[in-house]
Length: 73
Image (cartoon, rainbow, N blue to C red; front, top):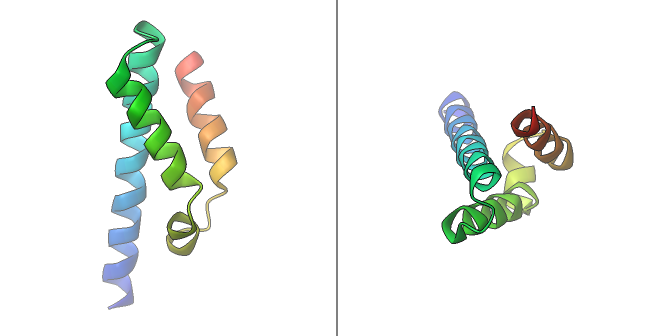
């Protein structure tokens, strides 16, 4: 059963990463896009949440920084 929970946790984190990338790319082209700003804030809140820390050992600040650097390139 642990494997199923691990797969679910990975899928949740991966979807958040995809949503964050999409929001950052949209904001790079349209800095005042309300939908993208909202998504960016909500995903950052998720990354910094206790739930995120419970389901993964990924350093949330490092993840945010790496994703932001990726979009800048």
